[in-house]
Length: 255
Image 1 (cartoon, rainbow, N blue to C red):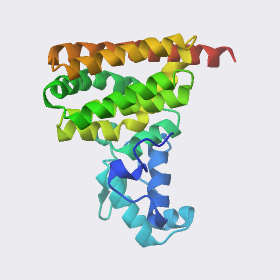
Image 2: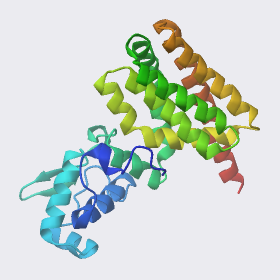
Image 3: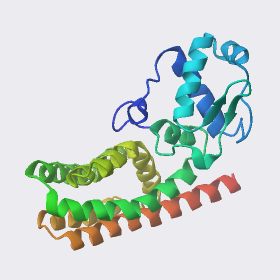
């Protein structure tokens, strides 16, 4: 997955480097991928040390991190058990990444776009009343990059994400800003999939225009118009995502 906001560990708040990182990444991916089902006991420390080539201390540290992510429950004399999915911290950047890496990214992308329907119009509404000159410049720069990259799909997706992050930042709400940072990589993946349905570069020009409507409403201080324009952007993306995922499934079925 492309890096948008830095290392995957940044959103999670835990270091994925070192020997314990090997355990965190390996076991986390196995849980998300279904190798260990909810309710299953993980292998004992001795088995994990052999599997990952690390010390017992590294295994214990890794399990503590996975517990903090909501993936496992550690009980003395019982062992480490996989928790139910509703207990997982799905906004943790590592958990988002693991979903993509094990082939479960489609499900998360659909859920993400539904959450964005709620969050982003609200962020745009707040940005219309709170954005600074620096915030407006950041949005304007992202828009210019979108237009400049209308024939470069990867560059366009990066600029698209930057625009949405700029709106979240302009809301000056720390929780909204953090949400944007956490899901930035998945927004990039979602935008890349959405673009698969674009027949020509004209589609990107039209998309840039809908984003420009958000910027102009925010710049004009019109919160309701900004929210409406942002909802249109998200819904257009949602429709493109549904179409792209459907075409991917149909292609896989006939392959």
